[in-house]
Image (cartoon, rainbow, N blue to C red; front, side):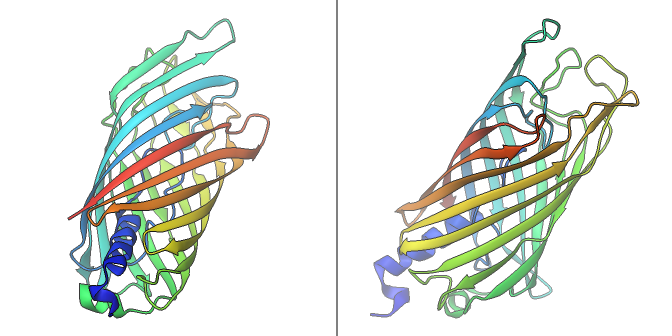
Length: 312
């Protein structure tokens, strides 16, 4: 009769842990709903992502090429664990993408190009600041959620496939540094509540190092990119939840050999996600998002993402 002994409750706990551990994937899209919620201490997961992105954005965060058609297909592997740091939850993660991106533009000058192989390695973590204590599984099951906030940091390493002879590449040939403040509010008796509802807001800033070997030039720099994503989620039952997703991005203009490109990102995207527990040790999360408003030279297109989360 108690929730910890219920099969449905165990399914809900597995779904929650999977949602928490299904984290950021490739560049240039949102991190997703319920990514930075509290998780039990010691939780670990491997997540495999398949991402299909169509539009005018390169794989690099916030890089738009107006008038282009860029197709990016990725498979991404991610590992995350949950630790205690000074009594607060700390969740370090490592992400490695691989796949292919293709580029074309009808300007009569730029040749079509493609790039395949590994993408840029990403290493980061989230430290709980408010409402995010490090909890044992038993204490976690009894914890009543409310307001929470954390500190997010991630580094992109220039390990991906890159050639200065190509106008678009899977890798970026530069470091990037991202910081953020994942915040949220949860309504429910616990994170295992089969009717749990959450509201999340996640602002970030991404700062870019220079690319010292860009296509057709000597040096390329990139302005800081600001983004904020929001998610309103609700559990339909202990094994299924839905999310309404919204993303806003601004900035990231490129300057090449001292000449600004006028390619700053400015636009809104919207979409939705759904998560299902397939098994207590496997959860599937599907997300679709599309640009709904932008400047004339802003981001366009959308992406589909499937995530298979395998906690252990």
